[in-house]
Image (cartoon, rainbow over all chains, first blue to last red; front, side, top):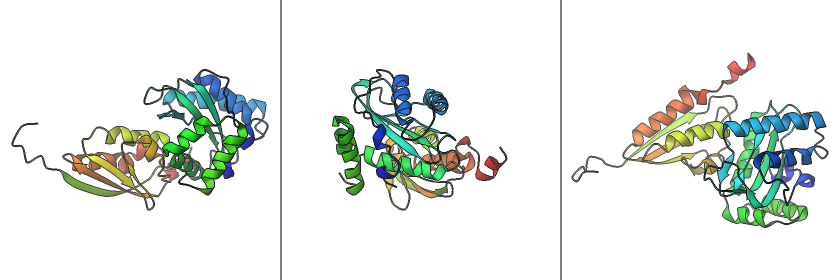
Length: 157
Length: 108
């Protein structure tokens, strides 16, 4: 699995308007509405579900990243999007530090293995300091897409 | 630690465990694993056929993509290596992360 297989490049947000966690989740889910064909009602449900999940345990894993996610019947395939925040967002992260890169992942309910594979791929890159730094520095949707496609080609980026 | 307690030797203890819950080692189970691993002094690594990761790092544990049925090798090295491996094996195999197994899931 590669970023190009499940990332919705059309929906990426280089500068999140939101200053808080829930706002960022709303912005990211809504950005997927049209490109991922989710429908308004489903978006609302997904937002609620992602926030509920986040309240159970933060997906702010430290090092400036958070990976809010949920399994939801509205999607037949794993879909992901990323939003960046220059000022940082409080995600109640494990290291208590602000989050600058938020990767939202929505997975189908009946394919747990694919969800794990997408997570594995995301974290394989997020564990790479250079990748985290490059991602955070992206200024445009094109730069984000280029970076993710480059990471697909060159795993050691 | 008291002087002369050479009996507190570092030991290495290993076990292979199988993931039994239907949803596999997703983030919540991975966090449970890291929580328990972090209680021990021993260094703990977890490996599948491709990677070996730090069992106390949630970022690294998320790289294992251990689906239901996957076997993982847990290795602990330190004064409490055996206790650590026993506790982690209990979490994975006996409690299966307090989640349903595949046959239980179908009934829902």
